[in-house]
Every structure is written in C-alpha cells, then in structure tokens.
Amino acid sequence: MSSPARRRTATVGLLAALVPLLLPHTTAEAAAGKPRCHGEAATVVGTNRADRITGTPGHDVIVSKGGKDVVTGLGGDDVICTGGGNDKVLAGGGDDYVDAGGGRDVVDGQGGDDVVWTGGGKGELALGGPGNDHLILEGRASHALAGPGNDYVDVHGRGGTVDGGAGDDVLRGGSGDDAIDGGEGNDICTGGAGSDRCHGGAPGGDANTPTDPDRCDAEVMRSCRSADSTAYTGTAGGTLQYGGGVIETWTAIFTMDSADDTPQLVEGPAGFQWSIAGTDENGCTWSGAASLAGRASYTVWLDFGYYTGQLYPDRSTQVSVQESCPGTGTRTQLVTPLNANAADTGNVPLHPDMSWIRGNRTYHPGGDDTVTATWSWDAR
Image (tube, rainbow, N blue to C red; front, top):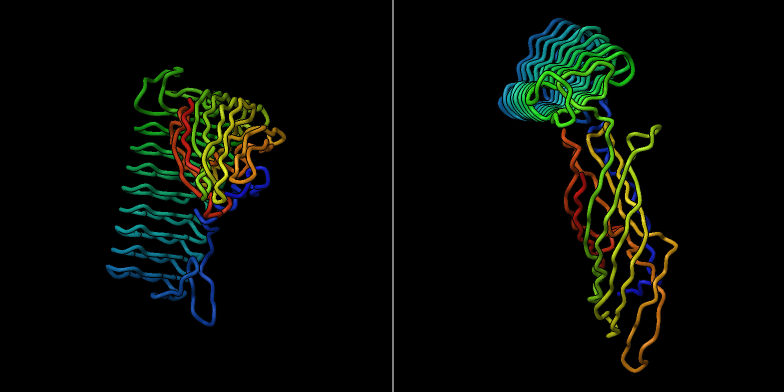
C-alpha cells in the first residue's frame, strides 16, 4: 500500500453524479434538418396541423410539432415531444419520456416507469399510471395523478393539485397554494412556498400523530406527522483496504440534526473506534488503534430524488502507529485515519419514510482501484 501518512485522495463531488438522473427537459429541436427529442433523432414526425400520431410496438422517438395533436406511443420505451398546441399523449406500456411542450396538455404515462414534463400551459394534467413515475408540472394550476407505484411528483408552477395514489411517494409543491394528497402508502409531502394543504392518506388515521407513517411539511396537515423532525442517532462501520493487504477497520456512533435555515442538510458529531493492521507490498507490517472525534452529515437533494452522506474523523487528527519493515526494524509513523473518503454513501434514492436511513456500499474512493472502501450505515 501507499503509506497512509502520505496518501491524500480528493473528495469526490457529491452533486455532480446526480445530474444524469433527470436531464433538463428539452423540447424538439432541429439539428441538420431533422427534429430531435431528448437528444434522440425523431423516427416519427408530425406536421403543424392537428395530427393523430401512433407509434410502433417498439422504441419510437416522436415529435408532433404544432397543432392540437393526439399522440399514442403504444409499446416500447418511447421518447415523445409535443409542440405548442393543446395536446393529448398516451405514452403506452413502456418506460417512456414525455415532454409536453407548451399548451394545455393531457399526458397519460400509462404502464411503465415514466418521466413526464408538462409544458407551461395553465391547467395541464399528468397521469402516471402503474409504475414508478417522475411527474414534473411546469404550468400554473396543473394537476397530477401519480397512480400506483412509488412516484416522485414535483410542482414547478403555481397552485398545483397532486394525488400520489397507492405507493410510497415523494410529493413536492411549488410556489403557489398547493393541495397534495399522499394516497395509500408511506408518503413524504412538502408544500413549498405558498399556503399549502397536505393529506398523508392511508395508513394512519385522520388525525396527525407522531407515529403516522406519512410525513408532511405544509401549512395545513392531516393524517401525517411533521416532516420537520430531522434528528437522527445512528451507527456505522466499515473497512478501507489497500492493495498490498493493509486494512483500516472502524466503527462509529453519531447523532445528526438540521439547522433551522438549512433543513436539507443534517449533520452532527461522530465518535470513531479505529484500527490499522496488515502487511503492505513492501513487506512492512502496520499496527495501531485510536479513538477519534469526527462528523456525520447527509444532504437531501429533493430535485433529484436522492440523498448523499459522509462520515469522517477530524482531518487534522494524526495517530501514531507502528511500521515494521524487513531489514529496517520498527519505527513510529504518523497517519491520518480514513483519509480517502472511506465513508461516502454515494447517491441513495430517497425513501418516503426518511425517519430511518440505512444502507451499505463498496467502492473505490476517488476512482483509485488500489483502494477499496466497504461500509454500512443505520440511523433513525
């Protein structure tokens, strides 16, 4: 292994890896004379009149242009972009992507795990259908019926109406006065700006209780508990293994809570028990142990539907350990424990019940194939 005293691995940016989850939506655009949708060349192109367009049972890329169009995707994982008219889209049974463009549109994702962007028209309607769908409402006073599945709905416009349907949903209001109903399942409802109403739905009674599985953050709440409770106590543990055979082993106990002005960031103190042992590629044996102070934190990226987290000892702490090498004997080395992003969650999908966060991960910190981090976390 490279000496722990000399190893320095840069922290990998957490947010950068989130961006591909939902690419910014783009309406149909011409490139070299051929329309494109979501970066793909169109296979079916409409006119500027009112068209009825039907795809194939396979993968279609449909661009409907202007007019009051009716687009049916049929089977396959379709990519559909409509123009500025008041359009109706029936996406079909695949995992489809729909960008409804301008106009007062009605989009039904039907079966599959769909991504639906409504345009900027007033009073648009997005239906997810069965599946784990992402519905983004751009227009004012628009409506979303997510349907069965674990869905993510985000109101970007003012004054949306959202029904999560059956499943464990994450539902977000926009800048206006939103009405959000979680439906059946363990849901998270966030009203956002404005005077919002949130009903958690089943399970749980009509009253708000601290044990209700639904969590709400809105001016008017029913059948849920407050989403503001963000205090966690947890444990974690893992290893950091170097290619030569030296292993750092650790456990930690931590507490986290959010600051009032940054509820998306939860952090707090952590106490580590750490040790190092093994033989590196030069035949040198390492040994040592210490108790360490550090920090735990996680950040919720609601726009992307993920959270990220880290645990780490105080970076200024160095520990004296023993290094015994053939021919040179034993000497004391100063090392910085877990100095290679050894406890990074990566991008973990949000669960509607974020009162309990847990998981495990094995990865190469900083992309260094000679170092392997394995760890798990459990906090509630």
